[in-house]
Length: 604
Image 1 (cartoon, rainbow, N blue to C red):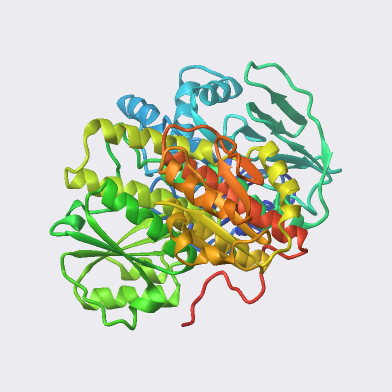
Image 2: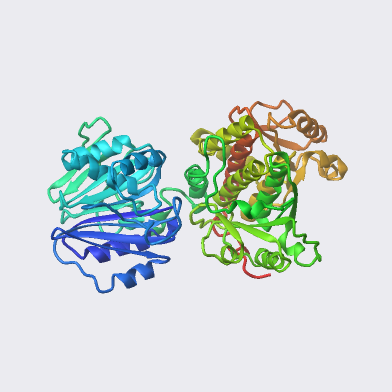
């Protein structure tokens, strides 16, 4: 996601900041900026798009002598990717950069505006610098004001702040978002969101822990905890490989991205959940005027997200919904009616088949919507409206967090349709929003569960194939689980509706057929159980995923007890991702770069 860099020292501050931001490009971003305080004067630069645009803006700017600098690459959450919304954000005499989400920013902003503070951006970050300055204006010293500012923030954050009141200082705070402090033999100070930004610049680093804050100055590092108690810094050596540093300690980008899903889902939901309503500021309410059907169109993993969400559109939104594979729709001479909202789904926004169906729908006069991860992509430019999933860059070819965020957006959009059409009661909407709020915690990977799956994976390296089975919304999840395994392990796998096994596929059942059974307790459990028993009676090897053991299963992967099937869906999604990855790793495969596949399929 977003990237932060900082530097306090006497060398070329601009180049150090820009170089650090380049090393963080892998995290994904849509705008960037830097601010430098030197000789009691601020210089700042912002640019939308790639870092080359920021470099061009800073071409005539240079630094010499001691300076404090901070920089940031932003992936838009609050507000569009514009220069005004780009970091750093400024007050009267201070600048700030921030990763994460300030959940109570609206409450803080309202109080500051009532006190006469003027805001420039749409971001949550800007409240930090204004709150800090308002506290200093009330008579607090800078460190006291910074400490009090941090105590009033709710949410996740990594923060760097520079102020003219202490010009040779960079303040920092960390809670729920990564932040590293580095030093070298020249006693220069560096900051980065990951090791990659610091390799080659410093020799020792402090991996800040949640709740820690402080400042660096010419003379040293001050570190304290949430109670204001001083903490002795603990230094560690840097890894030597920049690629390894980008993986942040994980073996593969795919593994890192599975673990990131909790963070990115928070970004997906932020600003879109009210107490009794779904809020999509990017949509014009008239989008659904005259709409009686939704047609979802996608490829691969995005198709599975579309298929899963079709259950939600009909169940919650009470609207007729169909799902199309883009490569098939292009040539079937479809009937495209004007009362249909045509929705395309794509991680990249460049998928060739899906893009062509979007153009077909536009030509036929349909209203169009794209659900996508990349702003300014071809589909976003082509469609009438767009909802960004905010997943950040996904380097693993086999999609994980893109699927999770697509599902979250589609779930929210099904509720948006329901509320727009008056098809959902207040109590049901409250329940659904509460479930959505739970989702980031549901997908947080449990280390014990991951270890259980890793050990179990060694039993699934042979055989003549896999069946992934589930009912209702868990059937598309079974399809996605089978696709993940095929993509990275090169083992044959198929996804089936559980009730379809007896209509042919059960002929394959024997001990060398591995069945991964999705058995949610809150949705058709007894029906699924009967289907699994049919396979067990034919001596198929069963691995059940549920919240309680199934006596006919050979293996069991437990999930937490939930009161609704949607948390079960998201937790089983993580289990399937981990299981596929661990099987592929045991087979010696590069799970980030599976053979014959590409991240964005831009050819027919």
